[in-house]
Image 1: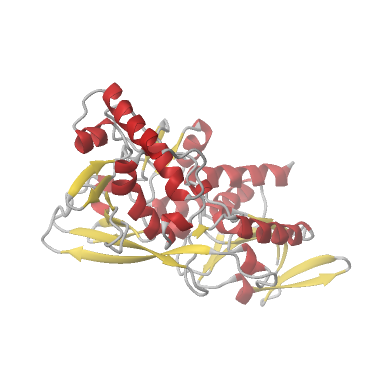
Image 2: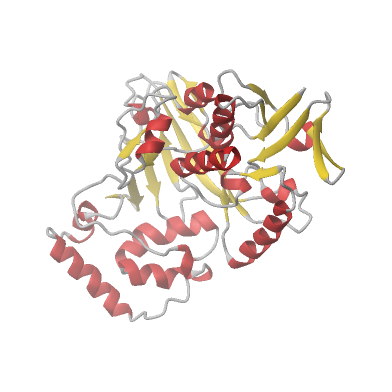
Length: 379
């Protein structure tokens, strides 16, 4: 059988691309090396609670087109992301806002908060930040940095803030209002019943095979000046949409790009109906190994008699583990550009998603880039 597209990865990028191409009459096959669809937004029911297996995912966007697109495949609830930070037994609201500053210094008005922060910044005398610590201190001052930024960031990156480049933190938003809504976007929520249902709806009527990698499934051979992609059953594919690791696609021939990984420790607490009173609590002390605890039922305002929590641990990525975040420093950017040059020489290849494009994307941006790739293909 002849297919127009082999989509590698049933996450958001691959699912949106496959959905749109099917709608335009193209023949598409989707594969995923995991045993399930939906990629990192996969949710599964545990004790009647939708558990975000790969960490908390809150959909948010200011793009009405993207919001309307997502709402074709799921009904969203009215969840507002309002995480809390815990530091040595103290609780602070995030993002940094007047509730945070009131708890930290007892200030009441925005003018008092601005004055306190400006005073701390001026006292440091940092004019040209040379590392992440100096950059953060020059943006928010000593107290906010030491209690809410330093330990959390060092756990995320596995390095001291003095060893991290300044450009990682270009800005730290300070809000001088009593507003705990983490996002500024107009639209926000979580699909009722979880993200997996949303992706299932996108992939309805499309052939999907899980539990198999691209390297196991397909072979590429050059014939008459173009690449011929076939699978073991003899099916052929005009193009490959690849959302896995870009360096893995090229068999790491130029070396490995760096990624950060995550490890999750999930626990069902029988007989406990409310563990922490909030969906997300960040732990900002370096001494506590996990960065946050997620209580999944609060994403959907659950009233179940039990609860499910997940502790999230940052980790150094090693081959064979799940890569989550690209490390977009200078060395990796140079290596990425070399892989991108190899990709340009393969007109049958479309790279997409966070791993394929080696770029951090929020969910709405993933959908947006997938729709853009579809438009380019159809133009």
